[in-house]
Image (cartoon, helix red, strand yellow):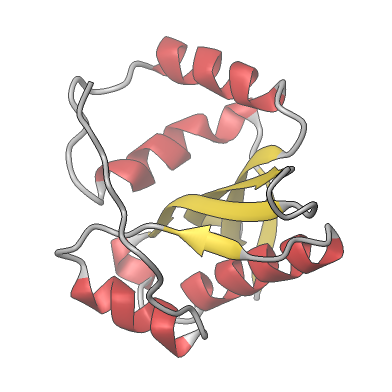
Length: 144
């Protein structure tokens, strides 16, 4: 059974470990930096890091931001930093996390839930499409 809950500060080592499975972050984040960023995130009205637990172990994580929008008059959801532990991929944990995010956004009255994914992660793209996500627009970034 999968349990999804808000992450606490004591969960940060597991969250950081999972994030590094997606690729190295430069520079590697220290625990103190993670604690500071986590505290700042908690000051936002609806920006939450979640963890998925199976048998008492953290096996997945994602961040969900619900933001109010003037353009639509309704909020929108943005899911980021989605990762399931390599040893647990393909077991339904990711789908459960995304269903949780979709339901949370429905309850908040969001008109959409969006995410971005690295262009090279074609397996992740197929996963999101199986859940009903559709390719929409283009994503642009600039390194700062």
